[in-house]
Image (cartoon, helix red, strand yellow):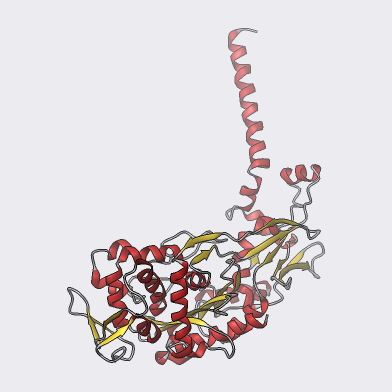
Length: 483
């Protein structure tokens, strides 16, 4: 063979090798990536014909499953037996409207692999089970239902966590809707109504919305102050009706416009129990932005938290506050540019409950195969230490006093030591956001909870964290203790 023919043959061989290699890559190695890409219309067209695995609560209550479609042989319908209370975090899987929540995050594990793709055929030849896997979540149906009913249609969110493990017991966003309506004949009209509803029922307020945390953030400030030795529960500060912001004509006052104690001086504990802004503005400046920032960061602020889906950022802008004491004073009471999700504020409470150690929050405890065998199991992992164990004990004692005799008495439960902190933050217009974070039983915590109700809920402009959010937290804690 002469030189030109030899070179041509070599080029043809290289070309065929590249074609075979690319085909193998696309059909085997990258098959799932291309098949699950949202720009690929084929999965949406075939989705209704595929069986998906079940999503189960911690007690194996069925939260989502596929059932045979009575009108189309060989096809399946995705159903959600528990309805609207569980829409978040379960999410939905719809041919027309995509996937959200756990349905989206674990779609590859939940889907049947009987797709006759080359990768699935090879898996079958190797003896792999192509049937869908199932998720066993950490959600406690009793706690989830109690949170949904306690919100009573008010716009807001509730998150409950086992503080010792990070297992999420409840995640409720309100208003909600039943995902079953996405499979009805007029689903497109329904979707349009949901999309344009000013109450935004498609928004997961537990993880996708953040708010000024108000006085619940004083839990972070108190932890930082005690950790650094800046102040303790008995440390006193002047007790004016207004705190003059440094370098500004603006002032900070307490919720009722009165002094915190006697108008002369007040302790940090008194200010925490009565939620006095004037004292905590000064405590924040004395402690410093960097020290508060360290405690905030360890609680979930300014951090990327591993979770099945992206979270709205919880922010304490440390760098912007280092040389701005006026802004720091406002931030120390949970206002100005401080923002937090309900999930992160639950982590704040859980850190105090767990002797200063914040655990990674997680939703799925196990993934099981079609035979019920566990193929993957979540192990509790520490996220960060937010404060020393001794500090957590002191902050916890002050939180108990908030519920016994302070602004959080509506969270009290007979025979149970409940620890908590109320907050009322800037909302839309003149309507405040009502907050409560807490945990119980204080001596051996099994649940930490955060509640936020937007725009005052049914109480409107008269709403406070103590009057609106604390009673919701009480009902959630009671349900958990019964469960």
